[in-house]
Image 1 (cartoon, rainbow, N blue to C red):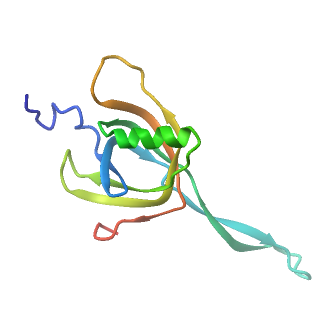
Image 2 (cartoon, rainbow, N blue to C red; image 1 turned 60 degrees about the vertical axis):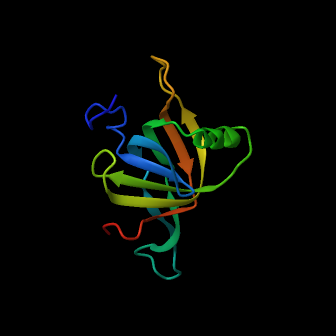
Image 3 (cartoon, helix red, strand yellow; image 1 turned 180 degrees about the vertical axis):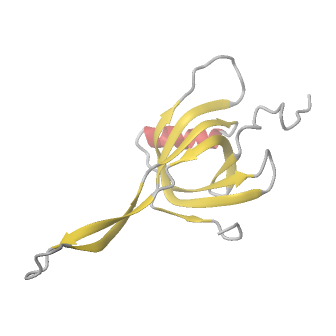
Length: 150
């Protein structure tokens, strides 16, 4: 049976996830692309009308991937290994596709990532693919992919 874009079970998963340069899953929602510069208050002696705010360190939220689908067992094994205590950091690339299996229009690379939370979906029917309701990844840093819009 051939699928059209609207019939395909993957048509709503426009975020492709790659782990160590291999495509492993598709997701319909990505959140947590947040970066914040913490500030450190500094009271200067003799200055009584304000407190200085000095730049501190950057922090970021965990990456949250929602409503995904995968047939890749290596992705599932990585999640299981980390959840059982074997922390393995990997590089994760997420690209936004313009449409199902079309060109990437935007992308981000997350270095030193590992999963910190996995939530499965309600199981309705048997399928060879594994559905993922939510997976959260922590990471060391992220940046936009080169060659894509800036």
